[in-house]
Image 1 (tube, rainbow, N blue to C red):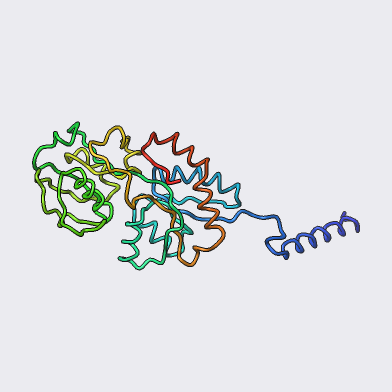
Image 2: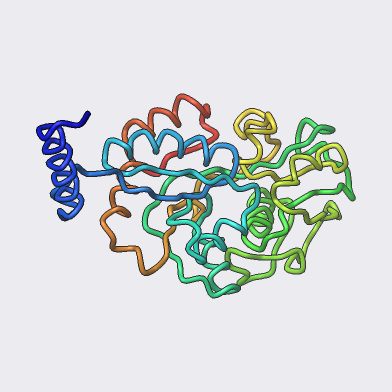
Length: 270
């Protein structure tokens, strides 16, 4: 049987709960702000798991969405299905914005993944025969990035003025008569059984058991605009959570994790 006192207690509890719900967010106990952030499988998502731990201390609850390609994370961000993503460098982002009209932009630099060229058949670039088949990413920025590596190493020559996104059509000298096989970036490590050499982005190389510092027969110098970044929609760039997210990423804890985990295959920008 419910007593008058117990009924008063229940009514009081309900009143307190209703009053608390009516208070402004800043007055109530702060609930973490949920931020959906995308990253490609491998190191990007692994690093984000550590960022998530740091961000939780700073009032952000990161929900990490993992992707297996380079296109979908920007599509999802522009559509509002993500709040942020972390997987790309500036040339790739700028090309995507130009091609697709995305209203997204960089808000902080993160890590660099020097691209490497790998072979199961040859121990050095000099051992490569004429007419060798070379797999390169088929997106303009990473394919172009590979061609720039080959030019830097004296393997090919590109026409003047190609910028950061040359294509195979821009190759004007090719002494070894290399045959370029253009594939989706995620597929290049799997192509190693079928081609002589494959250019593999580090975030795909590491899950495939490849280390740029140990296994690559050619490796990109850590220079230029290829440091990766955190991107958000343009309308969100000045929101407080963006700064908190960037600071959580560029933290001592994340830096220590990268140094201990990747043996120089991933380089921090801070």
